[in-house]
Length: 119
Image (tube, rainbow, N blue to C red; front, top):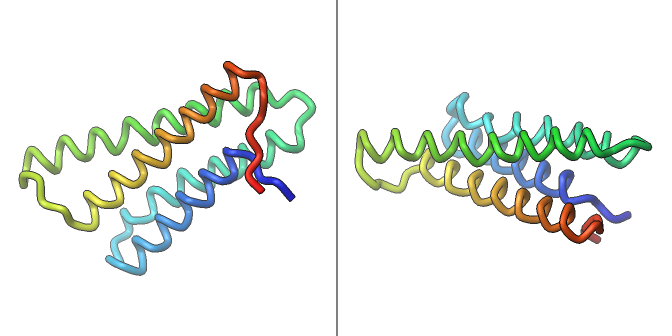
């Protein structure tokens, strides 16, 4: 069964969040997983809805927030401690990459009119 790009990004974010909790035991490590759960719900709604356009736009908004939040965190962390790679910086960079890639795929889908399915 093919998976839409929203569900694929959601799964990656959930794995990142759960992995962060196991690696650091910090409650803030769950933030990517929370973004992932929201995207998972929207991805399921996109699949099941006859009018999926509004869910696609909501998912894109969540993806945009998933890009902006890590940028803000990285600016704050780098301003305080410099560029030291730790678990927080790693998780923010990976979340930024996942959400950024998701937005690029979403923009491609909007431009081309095709939905990308991952097998």
